[in-house]
Image 1: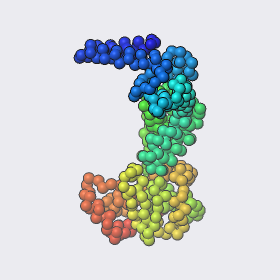
Image 2: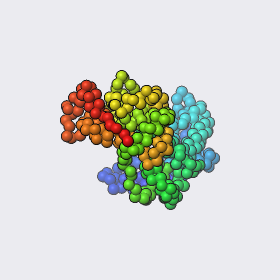
Image 3: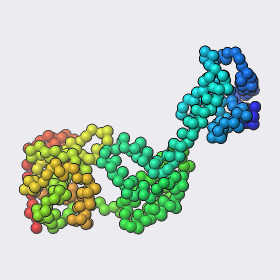
Image 4: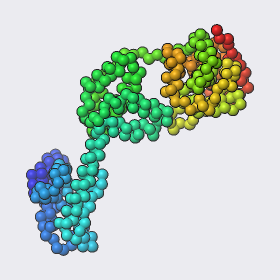
Amino acid sequence: MNNNDFETIATCILALAEQPNAKEKIKLLLTNFFSTHQKEEYIDKLDGKISGTVHIYFSDKELKQMPVKLARYFQENKSMLQLRQVRGVYEVRRHIKGKYITGSSKDLKIAKQKFIKKASEHLSKNIDESRSTSLFNEYLMIWLETTKKPYIKENTYKDYLQTIKLHIRPAFQKRNIRTIKYMELQRFFNNLQESGRHRTAKKVYQILCNIFETAVADRLIPISPMLKIRLHPYEQNKGVSLTRDEEAFLVNDFIHNPNIYKQAFIFMLYTGIRRSELATLQRDGNWFIVKTAKQRKGMKEKIRYIPLSPMLKPHLKNIDLEKIKTISPHLLTKHLHILLPEHHCHELRHTFITRAQECKIPREYVSLWAGHKADNSITSNVYTHLEQNTDLQIEMMQKYSYILP
């Protein structure tokens, strides 16, 4: 017996001392412990059969002779081995880091040696994998593929991937996750915000909070360095409609140069669909069909029908619906910013809704076309009635007509 054995006995006795029937429990503990070690002392010399499974420990001499990592593992975990004999063959086995390791031979010493070799190889591989996941960028991608991708829509996943590639991965190349500290992260966010990228800073903040919390759960780090990170107060622009002059500029620019991006902008402007819904677009006569983008993954898809409006009709012949479906949402944002630097794509949707209200179209119809849920002032029966009454919808959409400057 070594010091570790005595420490184990002492710890168990202290734990049992305050329990009912402590004397009997301690007696049973010592009986089992010493009978196990008596078997261990002579087990190498056994020539006969072993009945059932017995437990043995590596001796101090064996621990000194085995690879350092494996010896340390057995010393720290105070691990015993299971030994049994099947048809004259000794089997030494132990569960190590998620896997049962077994060494077999008719000679017990050889069985132990085989076990040591396999256990050492498995432990080294396990440590190497642990080091790999400690690299921040490697762990970042594991986090994205494991905790996000299965539960979010493809467009949302692509948005995460874009943010990670552009803003997070370049900042933490070849860094171990344990070495990333609070002060470094705060400087990183200060730089983003000082350059005016407040929305980006907020998105990156949410991602990094999630990653470091997951790393804490995986016991890679003791505490998240994001806990004290501060972002500057920032009021996000909720979006405003295009003015009539801006709308006229966009339409006239499309008429003179109807490239694929401007085709998409005019279509979005006069249907109110989101940029991410463009890829799902289908046409059925004078109706356009899209899948509502705000439905969460796993929920039943919401199909939306939008009648052809008088404002879109004269331009439709110059719009290639199949081509505009293929445009990346990020490219749409980029090209709209070139035309209208003060606006983003979602404001085309705001403009559609605003103009519909200006044209005195009841908001129930506008909500139906925009994919908004019925509010408390509208019963679900009325809302369903409007959805099913296509003639009324077409009639109401004819009101969507006005003159631009």
